[in-house]
Image (tube, rainbow, N blue to C red; front, top):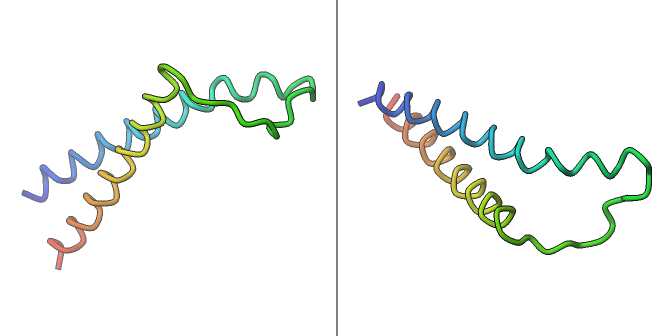
Length: 74
């Protein structure tokens, strides 16, 4: 049981890392010129919205898995 949870934790963490990297991939390009200071709110649409919610879901699953592993480890 613990092995399955550890494998699920690894898969979830890799997915979480990838979703965070994909979100920040386009954010840094406008900041090179200094024109985009990030002070303006932009609405998430399409794939950005889906990626945002996937990141939230993966983080919740990650923390639940960690808590379950800690509880079962005692």
